[in-house]
Length: 117
Length: 257
Picture 1: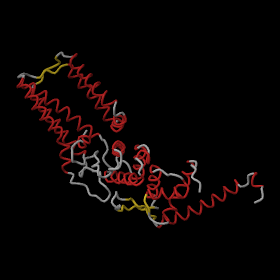
Picture 2: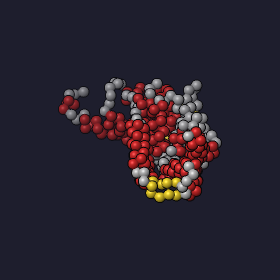
Picture 3: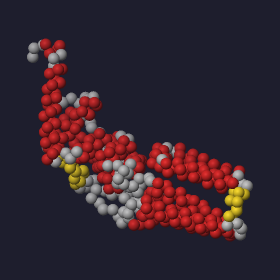
Picture 4: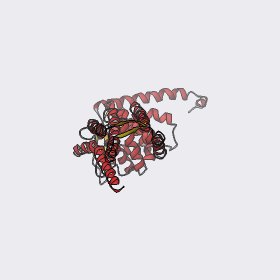
């Protein structure tokens, strides 16, 4: 995956879906989530962007919070999906896939697509 | 202001002071601005502690500074307030302003009463006193009308305001008192002394009412608050204690002079 900077408007749109997807793999904490997103090729997500999003997810009931003591350092605030959150994560992932299919159908119809693949 | 007075007492939690142990990895300037904005937005102490610990944890692990990882503290504070509920806890209220103003007036009245008594005569209230009082009432009116906004101005102009405000205020009041010295009327020492006591009593009550029972201290997640009674009593008694000190000083100066 390339490490270029994606347009921030695109990232703003997809961040919620992606964070929910990361949490589907299990409870995680803020910094680890940013690492996971960076490893996936989405670039660096700042704390000032991520935590308000997680806060909104918590407010909506998709996520619950648990502080766990850290190993020798400060504790970590773990975010875990609730049952409602798991349904939301799956739902959003499916809808985003459908969205990308739709947009690709439009974009792939551009002239260069005339070259047979 | 009561909160700032709390914050400058060593070893006390208080309303503005972060014990420091909650967010040791965060730059002090960023931390202070964050806490002040959260207090102004009325976010409760335990939620402030949670937000601080979250920032600290992230900063410690990422190795970035808070400014780099989170940007400006004020928008972050607003996000926290938006998702946790603002306006639920202590913020600057009319009680805060009333308590402080009544206390200051009581202190000034007490000193004037003592000077008058020591000089053996009735107090001469000058025109300058009257105009000065009017100025003070206007100031109070402004403070009562827009308390949080004014504190924000002070906080946002941390260099300009502490330099200019005392100069302007002292200059205005001194000017008024010096230039308008004709006696307006005379009043006995006793009424002024009684007024001083009444005003100080009002300030104690207002400060007591204003401070939440446990002091709404900033606590880390999972931590309980330290006993808050001391915070509340201390805050309420600051101005009377200062008044007594000032009276003592006035007496000493008079004895020496």
